[in-house]
Length: 240
Ligand code: IPE
Ligand code: IPE
Ligand code: MG
Image 1 (spheres, rainbow, N blue to C red):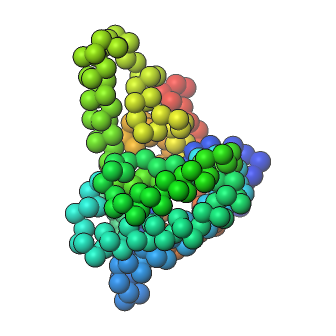
Image 2 (image 1 turned 180 degrees about the vertical axis):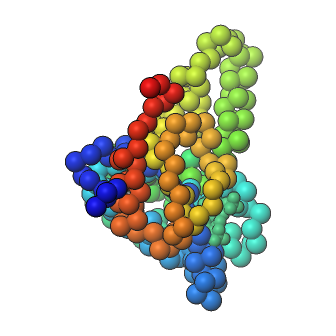
């Protein structure tokens, strides 16, 4: 089948996903939005397992944006509770599957119970060297870039660095993603053609794949389809 996933072809080292469509998935079934988020957590599990099997090294999941704080309190609370519950329930399987958890975003904004559980799971999985899972929480790319600029201005004011030392190559060291290569493949579910303040700097040359499938329906076959599509692209980086 043309475009089918081929384990012999290049596997993207880093996949980033805008997990969108939980609300529409729920609405189409006459369910509450938070039920869509709960079902979406099952997709997270399935995609984690598939990425491990396929040999993806980094997976970044956009779970909660800096703008998502604008949602009704009941939905925000539901999402934070789901996060805490998910991490608590899944830490042992993350360890078993050699997955290392990391987090990017304004974590100080999260409720204390979520922060505590996050730290526990991060610590418990720190020595794992299989798949690295980055979860973007209270994440906004513009905030991330401004935060980096502030750090640089402070460094400059202290005489630790001058403007001439800043380059395209070292600027990334001041972002949340300092230890992570740029995404090779960016997937957005549920058919929106926008980036929604996600990894603006890091996706400069990522291949973009958009599917109409809602996140709670997105499982291994859909991931393989996205990777299959990626495997047939020709990345030119401005060259020939
Ligand atoms: C994505 O699904 C999950 C989060 C943004 C937290 P949405 O909740 O945005 O679902 P839609 O876009 O309303 O369908
Ligand atoms: C992006 O989805 C954020 C996450 C998936 C966490 P949104 O649903 O918040 O994005 P918009 O509002 O459609 O741009
Ligand atoms: Mg949405």
